[in-house]
Amino acid sequence: MKLSIVIPIYNEEENIDSLINRLRTVVTQMQISCEYIFVNDGSKDHSFQLIKNLALADPAIKYIDFSRNFGHQIAVSAGLDLAAGDRVAIIDADLQDPPELIIDMFAKMDQGYEVVYAKRNNRNGESWLKKFTAKVFYRILKSITSVKIPVDTGDFRIIDRKVVNVLNQMPEHNKFLRGQISWIGFKQTYVEYDRKVRQAGSTGYTYKKMIRLALDGITSFSNFPLKVASICGFVVSGIAFMVMIYALYSRYITKDYVEGWTSTIISVLFLGGIQLISIGIIGEYISRLSENARNRPLYIINETNIKKEA
Image (tube, rainbow, N blue to C red; front, side, top):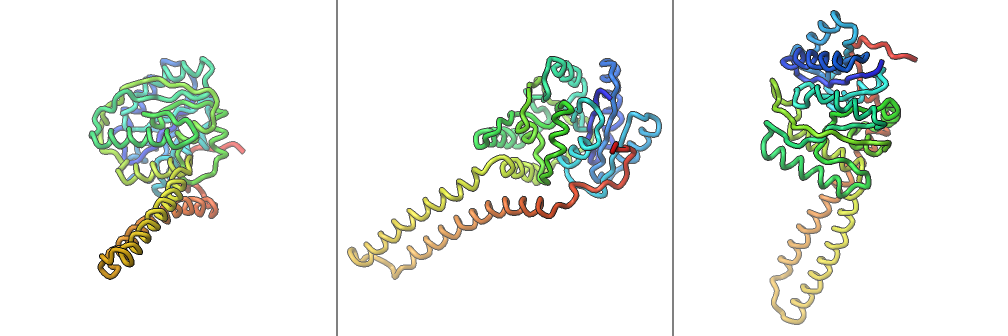
């Protein structure tokens, strides 16, 4: 198997037929053997039934059906676990990322690269807020991590089998695949493109999920928030010390004070706020350690037509 194409699915019934037709056209042009792995991440529409019907007519179409929604990154990870191809492409089903770009990405792989990712020039059809927050997040992440994670990229990419094998050995539950792939290393490059408007349906990637992904990215590849919490502790301690000196000065030198209410309430509120922020940051890291320590399965498969070799 030359290429496996992993496609996470969450309520994409309106896009599946167009997607598979365009992918088939691409693979025909490339003249390679290929399998299409659809990972149904707890869809509430008819996505999974459509995929099963396609699989009955085409043995190259594989599917993995989760017992519930486990999240986009976990869905991609499941596809990587069961992919058989020498190279694996990752693409979403909303057709914002053009399947035709796989031809150029595959050609780049033939030049000796192990990872070829797609870099967005424009993000058409997205709100200014989503564009702005994404731009800020990727640049902050780049500045606070020791791993060089490319900006303006998603999970749309092709990776070599050796990269897939390493990813499958990384057991953390809070996946941030584009960061993990950058951390692995090997020879990487990119192709540029303009991201299209979603063809049909609505995105399942809400702001809540985006914030969670951002937290996973930051806490997985940087201890910068912990350093910030420590620095804030020193700064607040210094300010509290100066407030204490001021309170003593007002009490015993100028005699100009209001029975300690102002300094007390300011100190309590200020210190309490910093402590809560610091505890929250530490709690995020502890939560991730706890999830991995419990060693639960990353996902649960309800049904699949893929037979994994021993």
